Length: 293
Image (cartoon, rainbow, N blue to C red; front, side, top):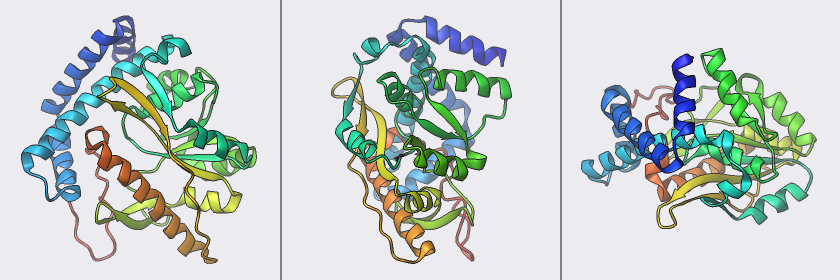
C-alpha cells in the first residue's frame, strides 16, 4: 500500500506534462515486463484484426500501454483538479444527449468500457456538476481500494460494488440517477450471454439490458478518449440507444446486449490504441468450443 501511496503522491506533485511523460515511461516498462499480458494482447488483436499485419498490431499494443501510463498520471493529478483547470484539456462532445436522457427522469445507464481514460470520465463529469454512480469491482488490497475510491468519489460520485450491482442499479434508476457500467469484460453464464464481438462469440453481462427494460432507464454510450489532433481529452456522449422489447425476456436481454456490444465495438475500432487488449475478453466459450487462448 505504501508504495502505491507514494507513487500517487509523487506523480501528483509533478507538473502535469512531466507526470504524463513519467507515466508513458512506466507504460513502456510494463510492456517489457509483462510478457504474458503482451501475448494475450497480441492474441486479442489477431482475433479482432486478422487482416492487419503483426507489426501494426504490436504498434497498437504499445500505444495501449502508453495510454495506460498517461491515465495513471492523470488519475494521480485528479485530486487537485478544478473545473477551470481540467477544462483546459478536457471538453464535452454530445453532452446534450446525456442531458436529454437525464431529463426523462427514469435514470441513465452510461454504457462504457475500459477505453481511453475511463477513470477520468466519471471524475470530470462529477466535477462539471453531474455526479454519478459507478459499478466497480473491489480491488484486492482494501487500503488501495479505499485510496482509489476516495479519489473517485471526491465530487459526489458513488461506488456500486460489482458483486451486488443489479439491486443497486435498479434502485438508482428508480431514483432517476446516473450509473456508468463497464460492459466489456469476460463473463460466465448465467450472468453473461453470448453475443458477437469483433466476429467472435463473447460472453457479455446482460444485466444492463435487463435493468433498462425493467425500469425504462435510458442507455447511451459514454467514453473519454484522447484526441491526438486536439491534444485534448474529449468526453463523448452518443445518442441514446433505443431498446428492443421482443416480449420474451431472455431474447430481449440478448438482443439488447448485442446492440450495446456493437456500439462499444464501433468506438473501439475508432480508437484501437485506447482499449484494454490485455484482458482475456473471449475466455469463456460456448459449450463445445475450444479455448481461444
